[in-house]
Length: 386
Image 1 (cartoon, rainbow, N blue to C red):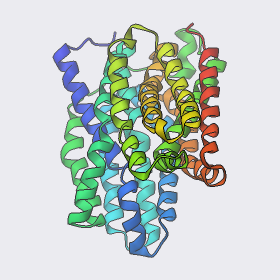
Image 2: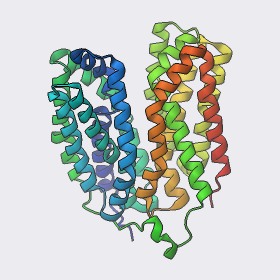
Image 3: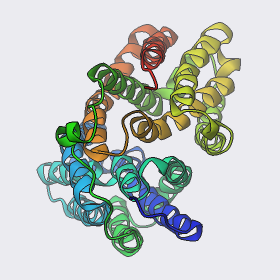
């Protein structure tokens, strides 16, 4: 039996894990946007090299994700998440002290290792180990908190950069990992019910259908591609549609609140429905937003940002809740790692691919992500609850 924890204890676990996840996202995924240019200038490089190192980090995270998930299945998530804090701090320390571009790349590789064992997939697997199939609410809870990672991370990185410099900003994030995130993860339950590995599952019941697994892996890869492409190129896309620079920036600022608002909706109204229903609705949001942008141009910038942000917010939750609802808690962590590995690879390539499309086709590049979104929506309709 999965132990039932008191509601107050559940709230403390969600708050602790959500806050530590916020720190981990802010000090890894969101630092290149602020620190890449000064990092590159220090070594006389183009910022493209820094973003290339960041793409390498995402590839490293894809390789270690299945291992981390299997480890959490067997022993619980507290130890893996605490290890991730130490790894993040080590990688950030290497960035701060790097005497050459080679060491800088090593630092990013170490951060990629931390991303593979310390971001949402590891957090979702930890909650599945604690709560079993009742983890949907806690999973939504940590994404509500960590949804503010960019809201907190970008300004804090900017303040540390302007006050001290990029090296000191990396050291500051390393200290936050050690002094805040690490103690918070130490508060998590020490273990969980051992989750049966997928290879052993035949003794417990039939294995998940391969077709459903492949469909879900495609959906995750497609939606991660679109999310990362928009994160990197949204202002340029909106300007290509005719929006002014000020409108493009203001519209981009709406994505974070739209994501959080959609997650509140998922936590309230949509939790009454199967996660498959909310995922189908969310996957269709970006193609609808793209159609609005093509038809109405710049004036639709705000509508595009709200629709895309809302869909992305719910899909982030679906990456944790859908495999749990469809395939159960047995082997959840390892399965989640494998399901998200293709998404991490495509995520690493998304800024380059969509950037080239935007440069070549202008606004019409939006049909690339809209088409991917339609395919993802169709794949979700091919998956059955049973």
